[in-house]
Length: 280
Ligand code: NAD
Image (tube, rainbow, N blue to C red; front, side, top):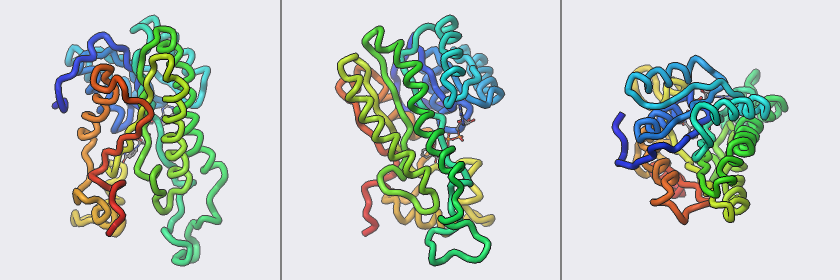
C-alpha cells in the first residue's frame, strides 16, 4: 500500500480494534508497513487472520486476536496474550464501531413517513442501546485495559474514531449520531484526564466514504448518485467522497509523538470540508 509519507513506528506496539473492518484494516496495514508490531483485534477472527496473513507475506508484524470490545474479560485475556507476544501497548486505535438498522428510521422526516415504514416511534430500545454500547463502551473498555501499559511507562497515544454526525446529527441515525458525539466528547475527557501521565488522546472524524457495505445506498445501478449521496456531495465543498487511504495521513500525524507532541484532545475532521460548510 502507498503510505502518505514516511514515518517510522519501528518497534511500537499498536493495538487496533475493529481491524477486521474496512477503515481499521487499512490503518493496521499502514502501521505494520511503517514498522510497528500490530495487534489486530476483532470479534470476527477470520477477518483479522486474513489481514495478519497478508502482512506476514510482506514480512511485516501483525498478529490476529479475537476480542469483543464490549467484554472486559475478553479484552483482559487478549491483553495478557499481547504482552507475551509483542510487549506493552504504545498506541491504541479504538476502531470497532458502527450503526445498526434497529436504530435507524426509514425516513428522513416524520411527516414523510408512509404506512408500514419504521419511524422514530418504532425505534427499538435494544437497537439504540446496542449502538451506544458498541461505539461508546467499545471505546471506553479497551482504553481501560490498554492505557494502563502507557500510564506505567508515562507515554503513549490513543486514537478514537468519531464521525461527521458528531458535529451535526445525520437524518435517520439518531443513536449513531449521539454515540459518536459521545466519542468526541470522551476524547476530550480522556485527553484532560491523562494529560499529566504523558498519554495523548485524539480522534479523527471521517467524512463520507464509499465501501462495499454502503455502495448500493450511495449509487444507483447506472452509477449515478442516489438522492442521499447527491445531498452528501452537495454538502461537501470538495464535491467528492473521501477515500479510506486519505485517513492515513491524519492518523499517522496524530499518532506520531514527534509531530504531534503537544496535540491532545482534538477531533480532526477528514471530510472534504463537509463539517465546515453551512450549505450556503
Ligand atoms: P466496518 O464495519 O468495516 O468495521 C468494523 C469492525 O468492527 C468489523 O470488522 C466488526 O467485526 C468489528 N466489530 C464489531 N463489533 C465488535 C465488537 N463488539 N468487538 C470487536 N470488534 C467488533 O466499519 P468501518 O467502516 O471500517 O468503520 C470503522 C470505524 O470508523 C467505526 O467506528 C465507524 O463507526 C467509523 N466511521 C466509519 C465511516 C465510514 O464511512 N465507513 C465514517 C465515519 C466513521
